[in-house]
Image (cartoon, rainbow, N blue to C red; front, side):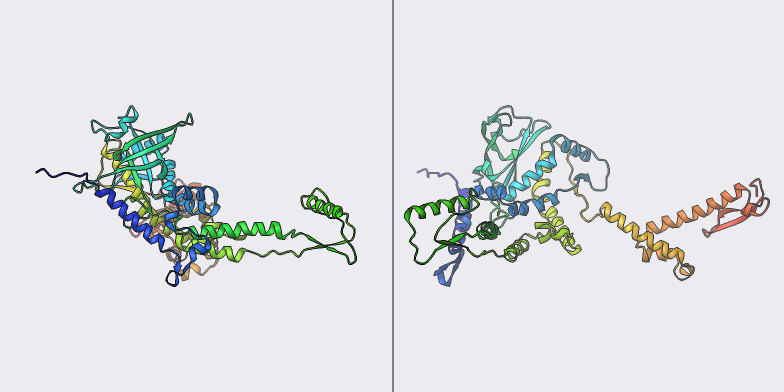
Amino acid sequence: MERTKFPDKSGQIQVLSALVGRMALASRMGYQYGGDRNVYQALGYPGADGIEFADYAAKYARQDIAKAIINRPIQATWKGPIRLRELGKEDTEIEKQWLEMDKNLKLRSHLVRLDKLASIGRYGAFLLGFDDVSSKPGFMQPVSTNGDRELLYVRPLGEAHAQIDKLVSNTKDPRYGLPEYYTIEYTETDSTTTVSLKAHHSRVIHVTTELLESEVYGIPVLESVWNRLLDLEKLVGGSAEMFWRGARPGYQGKIKEDYTLPPEVESNLLEQFDEFDHNLRRFLSVEGVDIETLATQISDPMNHVDVQIQMISAVTGIPKRILVGSERGELSSAQDMVGWFSHIQTRREEHAEVNILRPFVDRCMEFGVLPTSEDYIVEWSDLFAASEKDKAEVGRIRAMAVREYAQNPIATELIPPKAFYKLFLGLGPDAVRELDEMSDDDIIEEIREIARSGGVGGRTGTGAMDGQEDDTGEVARRPVNANNEE
């Protein structure tokens, strides 16, 4: 008897299992005292399963600090030029073609957008527009390997507009459990029409930020700070409302003793209060009622806000001054900047290069968009390089040190010039050697100029000396005559 074959859905089961486990974890959030107290519920925090991509996108669009949490690291990561070159070689074909593709496709700006979309949601998708597709159904087919392909465009998409349609279910496939097809949706640039198509995974670069057990769904950057973002909304929005109401708390009217307020007078008084509150009236005309101003009730929320910012800084790795900007115009401390640059360098090496750049470059090499190279390296801009302002400040300090050194008559006897260059100016061996050679050349040229002009102190004849280096590198002086002959 033939055994009935059921479709293999192990890939879907694998992802569903991860999602079920995630929901089970979310259901335990906030419980204390054996489940008798739910702190999350009391404070209005949702569980992780209650936050969707639309919520993260809205928070990024509308809340200032949420946008800074996403943008600050990404802007620093992709700052400066990015080069591709082969190890130990210069001006290679891959480097030239990479620069040309970056220029034609505005590649770096698209990569920045992709990084942001992947950070907002659980993943981002980079749709690659190869030249082998002439209609929407063509996106369903794997990229053609018939000849070298040309990359016409790229399109960064978020989780909501690049939904996973099907996973690879064959357990013998190296891509087992990974997306096989995506449902892509985007709005055409020349209209409001939404385009929907199904794309094969070879036409999409799948990008995630932080992964744990799942290879498909990452952890949104804002998830771990979601409660703090809600607290900040309460504190900042509440303080504004507190000022709005507390700075002008209102008035109360006390009816005088032995005075009866007629209904028509009461109605007129309420009308006056309403007009006064909305700045339609600047005075009150009342009889038999004493008007008293209520006490102002305003408190400074800064300390409470600072606690939330510190917690966000701790989990994101963004120094507080970089996250919220400098206070009173002060610059971030050197320690903050060194820690920040180290954080960004790690993000470049462990996320941007591994999850975004290399998968994209390898895909381009696979289909002939870029020359194939097995030992190419990604060269980022130097984060720790001194700025022009820093260079100018260092130059000023060194110039002051040289002036003090030159004006002291015994300085050269105590500290030789080469030692001064190295130990006090902090110059490297190459710079010290170059300065030494330049000094010798200047001395030689000065002596020759004296000889050409007719001698030292205006004397002619044999009093002038010609400079020439001997075997020891010192300048040997020989007498010359007025015609510059030995």
